Length: 114
Image (cartoon, rainbow, N blue to C red):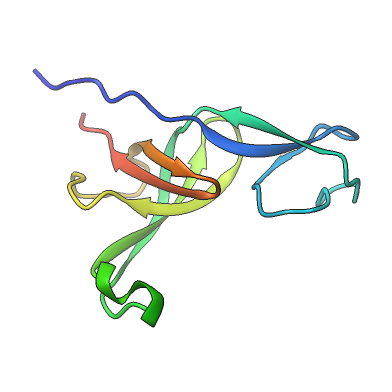
C-alpha cells in the first residue's frame, strides 16, 4: 500500500482588476496591466507536460546537478516550471504530479505513483 502524498499549495498572484491568476514574478497583470495584484494559493497538483534533465548546470546550480526541470499544467489552469524531486518515480508525459515543496515561484514536484 502506498502512502498518499499531500500537495503543498503554490503561491500565485491574482489581479484585482480582471481576476487573472499568474506566477508571482510579475509586478503588473499580463492581461490588463493593472498593478493591483494580490497573493493567492492554488492547489499544487497537475499534469506533467514536459521535462528535461540538466546534467551540466549553470555555475549557480553546479552543486545540484543532475536534476530535472519540469513543465506542469496545474489543475487550476496555470502552467508553471519547477523541478522534479530526485527520489521521484520515472516521469512520463501526462503523468500526475504533486508539489511537495514551494518557495515563491520555485516548486518541487513528485510524480504520483499509480
